[in-house]
Image 1: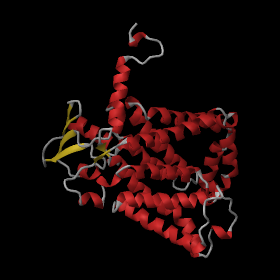
Image 2: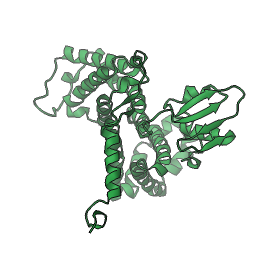
Image 3: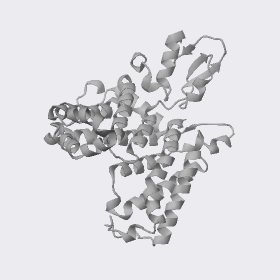
Image 4: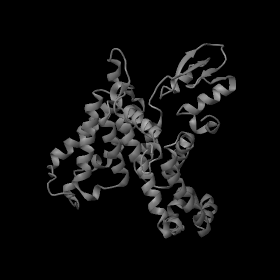
Length: 360
């Protein structure tokens, strides 16, 4: 009996693909540009995250002056002066991380400060802060300063390749968050049945009225406070999270899943206060980009394509007066309007408004 027909064994074809995948992940360097994009997004996010703690410190209030509950007794409680100094160290490290000076060291310092502040007290816990820690850890594990950084300008010859196993770790963590959130709501009859969202809308309808005014708020609230609205909306929200969790893993559904994820987080940001969650979650979709660069050739008459190609998807030749012409990874040639539409589906700034479903 061959291995391919033995019950419980992986066919030879599967073994080969698994070996190749493991080689790609752990042995073969690839572009870390996507991680660099996440690093740049995380810097300002850390500044916004630390802002309320610094504001309190400038007013003379630290965690010593309010209720606190330690996570573990062995975590040292820094004196107030040292605590404030650590916060400012975190601010400086976040700035260095964003501009890419001493990138990896700055990322580790930022992670250390944010983690220490997080674990000082259980009252500091928020899900978005935990996600921020996860992303910082993943970026710190990667040699993220090889591209889109001041460090990269000093590297000769330039090389944006490094080990990408932290990217796969981040992908797993990000997908797990969507799955855990969606599945926990799926098995909760109050959530999937709309009761939770309906109750939340009723409790915060005064905030809507304060924001929109009575003239606009009345028709809006008439719709969003209706029980039927949430009976439909809640299952859709649950299905959205589960689709993102699985759709990101497959090439044929990845672009749609990224589009849905961005729209999903924009909706959350508009309707709820989630601190830095929306920004870092949208930034984190960059990790799903194929870790290779300039493997498509493009002839275009416009320079703006290069300015918007943050992920370096194209090897661009700007030829004023020339028509658009793009050669894909598999040798497919697109010209004119088709080439221009395809390019728009691969540029982060235009992706949301492009016909991405036509070019997978």
